[in-house]
Image (cartoon, rainbow, N blue to C red):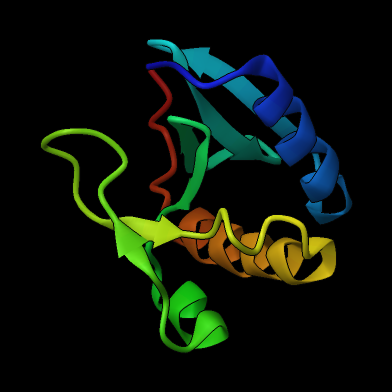
Length: 108
């Protein structure tokens, strides 16, 4: 079962204060990007954020679930998606950590 466009639109709208948010359709689901950094997914109309130390520290005791078969567990935040400021702070912390882990591309 794929996620609805309405769900993706709502999530993007909620996260807009966190940065440049984009939901890219992928295999009937959506990948979530903030300022070009892949940080989460919408799968079966549920919102998942990549697990990071910063995100875990921000949440405290995160609820974790597997977004699709054979995936590793992600933070499940669909019960908090209505809390725009909270979820934007989580996304900022997560993206900041993920961006610092990204290796620079080599020039040819």
